[in-house]
Length: 331
Image: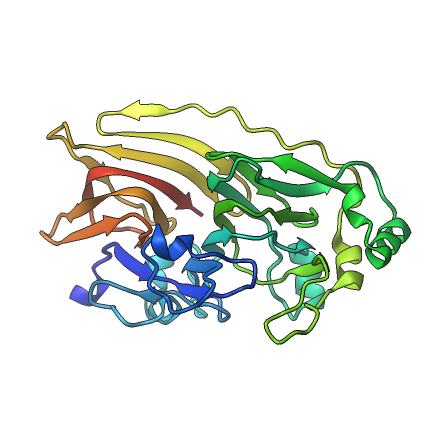
């Protein structure tokens, strides 16, 4: 039946107006979401706090979760009756510093947060101001007592390891690592499908109602890795070329694999062929450029900078044409 033809389709994101956000997702990535500021867009999400919508094809107008409940085979071996994906993909525009925070691992989340997933995540820096930085763990070992006291007296920043960042950097933030994205960073984030965040410190900021933002110090201290963290170094990356495209591995962990995928068929008549196997869905997040996907049944799908393309498991054969840069996510 036509409904079961596994074609790629576009997703439309949910937006978040966290107080630290800016407007670059609107002005540079064409996110027409009526929020001010527009801090995050959840590009590929089945999470109830921010579900993506199907934005093209015969299923247009459904939430991604509703579609996957109807067609669990689109998820491959990750199929479930709940329609929940194991990952969540975001754009993040940090005009101001994010809170200093930590995420629990799967075991703690399952035992203390009603069976939810924990949260390990990967950041790809799409752009960064000259002075942009992030917080990654501690510059030396601390105890719970030291950390709690420093949070009370406002001196916690002396313990935090700050790392300069620049465009094209990659960071993996394992669950339990205290961290924060700094002002001036534009980030693509691939993470476990979780929205569990324990805030340790938020610079004494007030929310839009004039109230101090909620902190979760007891839970954070319970899950945080308090050992000193080695300064994160950029992994050795190797571009692998073939006619019309190039790829490089950015991150591989137990939850996902992420490649940077460069497409350029403008000067070639040979298009790039692609097809998923039955094991898993795949996602292409377009960071720059544009193009078109031609499918073997004659249909086509145009994509542009900022678009998120979901490719079901065991998809139709297709060919990519255009000049674009993607993050290619595989589970």
